[in-house]
Image (cartoon, rainbow, N blue to C red; front, side, top):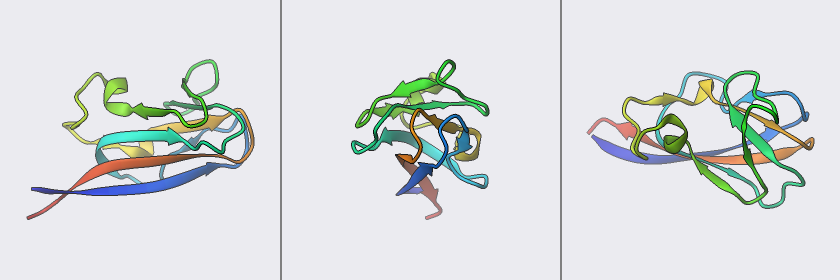
Length: 106
């Protein structure tokens, strides 16, 4: 199978409100999440209901490899569902950029 790189950005409108990275089931491999350098506070990555106390903290400009979080290699197998990963923020309007590999039949 060939792999295609995908990317997206997610704005967390309200601090203290965890939101899924994507709205619907999205299988991914090799996921990286980056807190945008222009953010004015930390973002927190984790499961549903993630908070500053429970999440992986990313400072502005910091990147996190979710393969490390899952205890697997960067080429995740099986897929991870982006809809099951949540992000919260310390400051309204902070953003994250996500990049992942997607299998393409071929």
